[in-house]
Amino acid sequence: MSLVATYNLDGAESGSMELSDAVFSETAHASLMYQAVRVARINERQPVAHTKDRSEVRGGGRKPWAQKGTGRARHGSIRSPLWKGGGVTFGPSTESVTKRSIPAKMRKKAIRAAFSDHVRDGAFIVVDDLAALPAPSTKKITSFLKALKLASKKVLFISDEGLEHAILSVRNLPKVKAIRLENVNILDLLSFGTVMIGRDSVEKLTKQLS
Image (cartoon, rainbow, N blue to C red):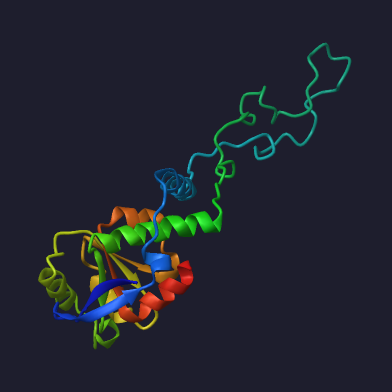
């Protein structure tokens, strides 16, 4: 079992907590981490460029002229890509972006490995009394981060039910990002050097990643 210190909102060490080795002592090959990050980055793309193909262009409901007898080339619609103002062939489309997937076991293993690195580096901060915060207070969270010398570092706050006041407290801090427990992802874990989580949320996270 890995042992981490727990802190109260005053920034003082209040005790310790055991973490499951199955989740927080994971190691993963660099190729797995690369694959998980690559899939996540591809899937977060929001395509904007879009051209209309011949089925989307307006007009062209009737045949331009008779098939035979006019001496001109045969055509069936002015929406053909051959015509000016017609559809575009193989142009960019918002529907043509291919989403990638990765097996759930591989994705969870990569996330466990990222959490384990934070634990080994002493960058996994467990807070005892986040739920006891009586009202949103950015000042309180700022003083807490200063006490732990994290005021100038990027911190990922993993929020949970009952922590609404804490979520509102970190919202205006430029280097702190709050994400829901169920939305934990590899990109955020690798982008933020420190993870902050409530003591009651650790058990839920353990079950989620087991």
